[in-house]
Image (tube, rainbow, N blue to C red; front, side, top):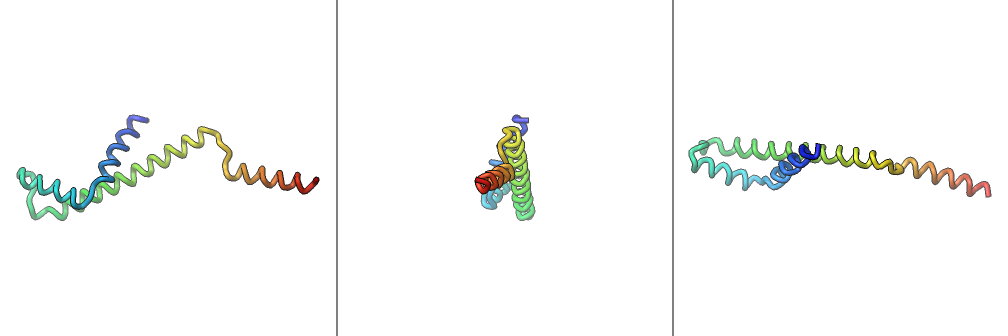
Length: 96
């Protein structure tokens, strides 16, 4: 599980650092190497940006889920637990 989390984290870092300018530089490098045609630049950049956004969203979802599971595993009092105790204390204090 942590190996997957590490890989997603690293992929997410790459996605978060992806900018349109960086994607354009990558594409220009591909053109120089003959691995891409100049006319396909906008499609490539859009695909890179879409992929980076999806990776960012996936990473955010994964981290959120892992944090939720970790917190649940700690068996901490929930907001509802505390409110219930406060109400109980208020009722006990009112009886005095």
